[in-house]
Image (tube, rainbow, N blue to C red):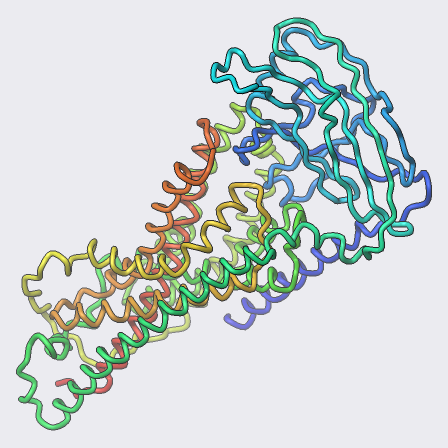
Amino acid sequence: MRTPTTLLLLVGAILFLGAGYVRSDASNHRYKDGDTVPLYANKVGPFHNPSETYRYFDLPFCIPEGVKEKKEALGEVLNGDRLVSAPYKLNFRDEKDSEVYCNKKLTKEEVKQFRKAVEKDYYFQMYYDDLPIWGFIGKVDKDIKSDPSEFKYFLYKHIQFEILYNKDRVIEISARMDPHSLVDLTEDKEVDAEFMYTVKWKETETPFEKRMEKYSMSSSLPHHLEIHWFSIINSCVTVLLLTGFLATILMRVLKNDFMKYAQDEEAADDQEETGWKYIHGDVFRFPTHNSLFAASLGSGTQLFTLTIFIFMLALVGVFYPYNRGALFTALVVIYALTSGIAGYTSASFYCQLEGKSWVRNLLLTGCLFCGPLFLTFCFLNTVAITYTATAALPFGTIVVIVLIWTLVTSPLLVLGGIAGKNSKAEFQAPCRTTKYPREIPPLPWYRSAIPQMAMAGFLPFSAIYIELYYIFASVWGHRIYTIYSILFIVFIILIIVTAFITVALTYFQLAAEDHQWWWRSFLCGGSTGLFIYAYCLYYYYARSDMSGFMQTSFFFGYMACICYGFFLMLGTVGFRAALLFVRHIYRSIKCE
C-alpha cells in the first residue's frame, strides 16, 4: 500500500507542478501595436483588513458595457479573487493623455458609499497581463485637525498608468493617482465626477523571464535578509545549546545507568537517578483513549507530509509572487492525495495498540482535523456572506470541495486504513508489560502536564518567532514572502528542537517513575502550536491595524485551525522521537 500511495503523491505533485508552470507560460503573451492586452479589475477593500474584500464594482464606479467575468481556478476562488473586465482600455503601445472614460453624477448615497470607503483606506487591485496593480481610491485631508468631523474626503478621478515593455511583451506596470484631480466627498450632496486615465509606454531592457523579480525583491533586501539570517543563527544557537544539554546530561546519566546495570543489578539503588529502570514493566503499557491517540498520529503524519510537499513545490518556484491561488490549489490537492497516509498510519498503529474498532478509528481520523476546519469554515463563510465579501465561497466551489473530499480524500483514507489493518504489524516493545500498573509516586507541581507543556513549547517557539512576523505580515498583510529556502531551514530547526526537548522531558518523566509518557510526549511536542496562537493575540493587538468583526473572526478562526494543525503535526514528531528514545534505552538493559 505504501508504494501506490507514494506514487499517487508523486504523480499529483508533478501534475500540479506542471500545471503551475503551464499557467505561468500561458501568460507569455506577445503583442503587436494596438493589440488588446487583458486588464481585469479584481477587488477593493480596507487596506488593513486583508480578508475583508469586495468586488470592484460593489463601489459605484462606472460600469462599462459588456462586463465579463474571468473564469477562475479553484485556488483563485479560495483566495477571494473575482476578476472582471476593467473599464480602461490599455492596448499595446497605445498612449493616451487624460482620456475621459466616464462622466457620472454621484448621488448622495453613492457619495456616502465612497466617503465611507475612503475613510477606511480602501485600495483597489487589478491585473494587467497577469501583473498586479495596486492603488488607493481616495485620500483623507486631515490638515492637522484632531476632530474627525472637520476632515475632508476626496476621491481620485484620474489614474496614470506607466507601462514598461520589451519588444513585444509587457514587463512592468505601475499606477499613480493624480493628487490634483479630485472629487470632494465631504458633504452629502450630488457631485459631478469626470473619470479619466493616462497611459504612458516606455521601453526597457528587462527580459520577460525576470519581470516578476520586482515583486520578490522586497523580501530579499539586505536589511530584511540580515534579520532572516539573525533568526536562523538564533535558532541554530538554540539547537546547539539544547543538543549540548542533552549530550552532557542525558548521555552521561544513561551511560552511568548502563554501566551500573551491566556490573550488578543490585547496584542501582538511587531511585531518583535510575528510576526509569524500575518502571520497565509499565513503560510500554498502552495509553488510554488509544483510538484518539492513533487518529492524532495519523492526522499529524498527514499534515507533516503535506508540509514537506508544499516546501518542495515552493523551493522549485511554483509559488512565485502573485501566482493567484497556487498555494490554495496545492493545499487542497495534496491534502486529498495524502489522506491515505493518515488512514494507514492511524489504522496500523491502532491495531498495534490492540484496538478492535478500526472502522470507528478511521472515521475519527477523517474528522479529527477536517471536522473543526469544516465547522470554522461554515461560521466564517456565513459571516462573509453577511458582509457580501469575496471571501464567501460560491455554491459551485463548495460542491467541488465536497466532491474532492467524497471521491478522493475519503476513498484514499479507507484504502489506507484497510492496508494499515492488514499490515498486521506488532508493537515492538523491548520489555514485557506487567499485569497490574505500578502506582505513580507523588510528583511536584512543575512535573505535571501543563508546566511541562509550557517548557516544551517555549524553546521551539523561540527558534521561530522572528520568522513568524514575516509570515504573518505576508498572510495577513500585503508583504511578499519569497525566501522559502530560509523558511525551510527554520522548519527543520523547529522539528529538531521539538524532538530534542520532548526526548529530554520524557527522560525526566521516566526518571521520576511516571510511566504515562505517551500522551505527555504528544502534548509536549504539540504545545508549540499553543504558543503560536498566543503570538496571534500579540500580533493582532500590537503589530497590526486589523479591525471589525469579519476580519477579527477570520484571523482568529483560521489561525486556530492552523495552530491546531501545528499541534497535531509537532505532537506526532514529539511522540515519534520519544518512542525511539524509550525503545533505545530499554533495549540497552536487561529486563526481568
